[in-house]
Length: 182
Image (tube, rainbow, N blue to C red; front, side, top):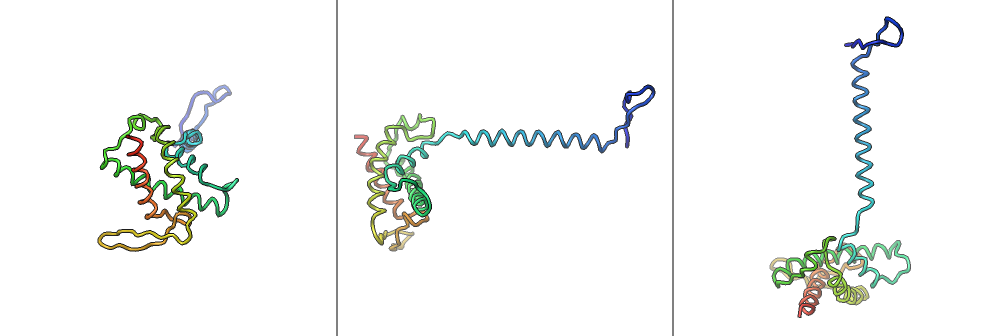
């Protein structure tokens, strides 16, 4: 179907615009909006501020990593340690609730916590433990799964996240928090 629209530029003529041309312009306008919106989302992601857990992980990495540049196999080992530390911190949440441990400053932290004081305390508690555990040769853990207890190889530096280390490390963190609360 064609539409006739006012003067076409010369006297007595009119422009004929077909429905397909109108639809094509509509799709182009929609595509431009989608691209503009997508670009704004990507731009917003680039400026993402680090979370409190990111800051904690970076501080622990700075204390524990021996390499000048963390790349290749060293980076893989550091990433594996970071995943175990994150797993341990996840277990801490439940243990904190059971023990009644709560920091008002951490609750107020805009980056999701921990607060600066707790971050410093956690780095002092976690870093020596990580260094000691990472330096052990053929380390193993006794892990309780349901009714069974089994011995498993430590995967702190080789990955994936080490369940035994996460359990032990969460106990270290809870102990450090209890001592700091006194």
